[in-house]
Length: 256
Image 1 (cartoon, helix red, strand yellow):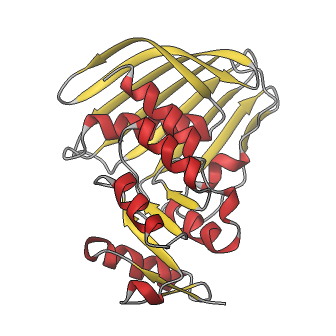
Image 2 (spheres, rainbow, N blue to C red):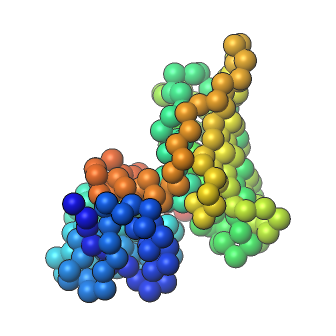
């Protein structure tokens, strides 16, 4: 059954393209009252916008590319509803669901290349979110250097109850399209994950090098946003947790 969606003007071209790629799921509608899903722009105060929609009786909400907001407000929003879907440009990439979780990684490095106009704070949040989606959670930052063009931080995270050393670099550049590269290291394995900008047609990729050589992990030819929009229709409960998002905002707040 197709769901009609209401989108703000600034997201109409993106939403139209996503809906066209999911023709059995969505159609873009004009009046919000007739929409089965309301899409919010994550570049502003999306928490306040979501709270307003909930108060108006609109309970099926999707936040497109959510940016930094107050974590306490996200906690308050999470206490009101569990039906808000977060569509994230890197953390939502389906390749992250195919990564091995049983390898005793001891360190992970992450490089995030962002467009020059992207605020460093947003790029850092997207990087923290992609680390969590890859299984590296509860990041504790020990040292951080933030400049106008990027950031470098080191610290620890958890991966399957193990403490893992973390090094994360953010650089704003126009030389290449935005993307993230994660490399996790264990005594016998190196895992490399590449997360492209959803605006490109490239899929996320992952390779694992170990005693038996190099293995290419399963590739899903679906962008991060398309996957999340599909889940919003099929099984919204599988979407990213608002409470996890709030926790990552607190990590961001500790370094910026």
